[in-house]
Length: 360
Image (cartoon, rainbow, N blue to C red; front, side):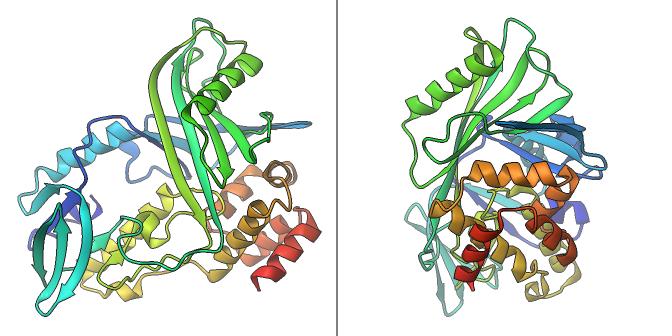
């Protein structure tokens, strides 16, 4: 989409491989921006105010100049494929990619046991595990189940996005809910965990029902959409340049290990790649975030993985002792070292110091 937007790819043949056509609203992406973004046209809802809830602490803050935004998967798919289908130089193939391997004339991609031979091609891969990677010492999962529900009575404030609610029990590990209201009676409600193992589907559903009853007094509601997802949280280093491919998305390290946020990191990298190709520059000139951000992520992962401190306590400290705008900027890897030292100083000192020394 970004290469199409730049208008400099008409002389290139592009093969786009996906597992299957995208016809369902199977996910949502949430992020924050200070300006209208590349996909502003399909932003489903946006909020100027966010709230954070935990035992003994709650906040409700206008996050200007940021806005918290949400894009629905089906809107994203329809918007992108509508534009892509108009490009005569782009071919779409559906199937399971099994491997990529090099040969004298170029590279072959194996799709459903059929080989596509590509000469002088640049290959971008977004499939984690397509190329062998070293195993990480830490492997946590961020997993979540969400419902878009409609209530028979007004219980939501559509002006406020509840991004973390830690009032739910922490028996499985770091666990929170979040609620993105579209009206007083309609909202996306998610139950999210950072743990080593998944739950049974019934458990997510039971916890969602309990949450809606405990905090919104809801026993009757209709579910119009359901989503479920799993995001890896690991200290494994995913390289942009692989053996045969350039790795993008989660496969290329664009998932922030400590939070799971991915969408905006992909957007930044995608624009860099598109600019490089349009200008005829080498992809090896792409900017990579300073290594200290990975150090911060791995330090937090170490604490969560080894149960040195509750995630609930960590995130509560972050939002209780810092401006939400500063936290959002920090989560975007856009802070200065001075900003970061100020934020880190608000976290429990001894657990983070020990975890940091472990990383060193």
